[in-house]
Length: 199
Image 1 (cartoon, one colour):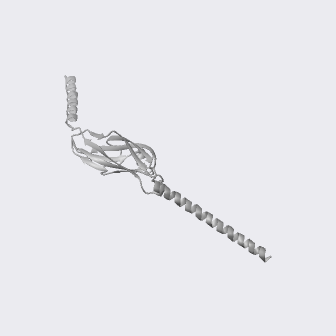
Image 2 (spheres, one colour):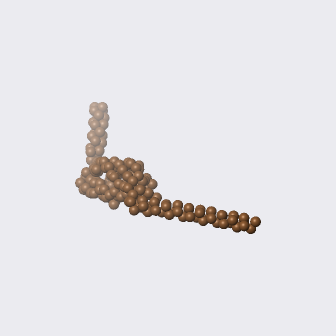
Image 3 (cartoon, helix red, strand yellow):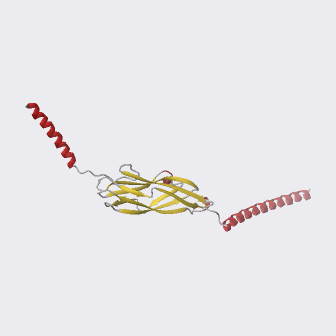
């Protein structure tokens, strides 16, 4: 009889535990991001060290909250896209809050400084908007979605007038150098002749 009571108690504890777990509301992060891949092309100056000009690309990305609670979305870039010597990536909004089933477009601007083929990710980090702590940019906590980006930056073909200006400048410098050299040579010859005459 005592054994039966013990078994009933154990079963009661287990059932109570399971009911307690079922009563706790479960919240799962959910989101989508697109496009999943992008190949972008631009041109940078022929002689970048002589120009402040850069290659600029502007594209939209779309993010959506597929969960049943508001979510905070933080954007950041990785790899080559996060290397300021190569390019800078700017977001119209670095952090947004999406209501359930809300979708939004965010503008991304790439400012490319170097010629080459570069790759990296645009990352959208989803987390609960009701969390007390704000996720820092670059944090790995939450649902992380990536858009793989390849940037192809080619050298801009120089303008004919631009080339002509550079060539003209070089010719002027060469001419000035030769003129100074001839002048000095003449001066030396005059000095030599004067010395010979004095003798």
